[in-house]
Image 1 (cartoon, one colour):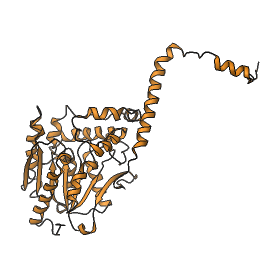
Image 2 (tube, rainbow, N blue to C red):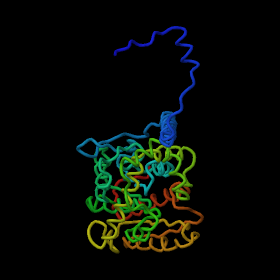
Image 3 (cartoon, helix red, strand yellow):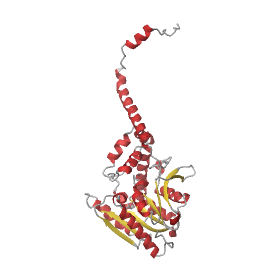
Image 4 (cartoon, helix red, strand yellow):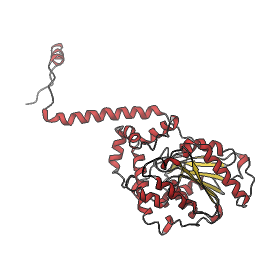
Length: 359
């Protein structure tokens, strides 16, 4: 039989206020506690993201027909329009801010291009990270250069894993487009394969990566998991990095890039990742090698493998750097800037650059 709702009277209000609260069933408690914790964690992460108020330093440019964009910072004042363009490619788990100090030095004598790869910094994520390849990353860079009008000649500056991307870019460009390279603690395919036991081999499911981000777990765990690799990130750079590490897109991009590098480096005896001695001809290059691996047990082979990188060109210099870690461009930016200037000067002497870029 249908019953009308209980009338709202002072008596019924008093009863509801004083009635004891019933406890949830015992079987529900194990479910309620994680749910409450997850809700609180998600709320804290949402507040943290709103409080960051980060703005891109450059512009977002489309690199694919679907409208996917990458964040580009391109410094090209009118007085340097004829100067070479220094293209900076970051290594694994890093992006454009790591080049800020070097850019300030180099930007006095050359145009400077730096950017965030897909899923890092302010760049859009790819729809299918597991399909990422060295070639697709290099093509993104090539398209971004063209879109912003960053014309050759190029001096390519590559850090760590970024050396694979810039090497493939060289193969995509015309030989006359690249007048020099600076390798900063650069990785070769051989280096990548020897690091297989300590780098990500697989990309996590997208739902898991995004959940870890939304719950704030990446913001807490990523800096711990990446130590001591990221100890060089301090101040504003650390804030920018933490903001990126907090997102599931970053975890997908970071692991997908390493998975692609491992997969393709194992087949480097042929194809785009085949870099035999002399493949760069007489293009001027400098290879900067920090001494961190000589001070790290079991890692001296990384320094030794950089002689392979120096063999890419008959016009090369292998330069050791004392008291320096992996991120040379952060710890000793003046050394990287000096190497760039010396490569530019040598390219001019070889008449690979015809304009006066002395500033």
